[in-house]
Image 1: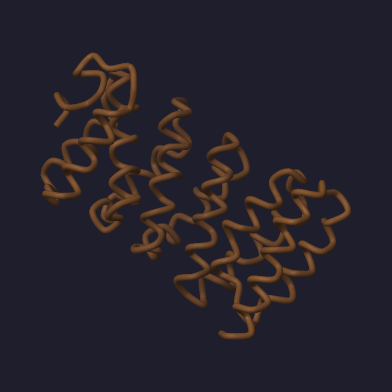
Image 2: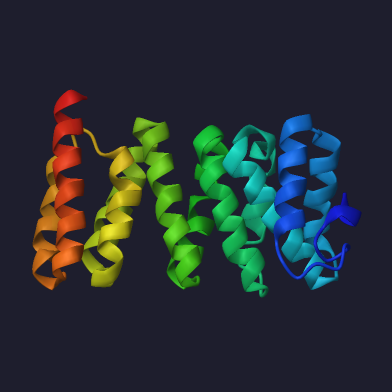
Length: 211
């Protein structure tokens, strides 16, 4: 599979990597996926970068095909190669939808990457937290406070996107807490940001009443 990566084909774009991800999804080629996972450890940075792209593109389409590799992605969250770090957090967004247990077991690693990672890493960690909350009430008890604390302290420009990412785990038990923290931050938001947050509040209020 390495010979089908963008680098191997002499491409400077991601098209071959996306095409490979689609192929691996269509064929459910587990050996091929394992080969791509092994490529994450390549000494050639371009190859490892291509491999993480293929893997999270697979995750977006068929997360179950990469769900067994949670530990591999966790191990790369603190890589000096930022592409691997944020790419692995992106992959974990999809893994956490179908294999939350394996991700929750490494919650401290995810939290550390959230605290120290790039903007893209942080964005995707918020989605990981939301998926964990959505998966299990026990996980919710541990992780939802992290989301609330984040929304109370993050940069104003992050509030709309991150509230949208986390609204999936809001229910009638935590709805008021979620709405409260968003309402308290409204004074810091622009008109367009406020509109987005108001939409989230409206949606979670409706959703919470139905759960």
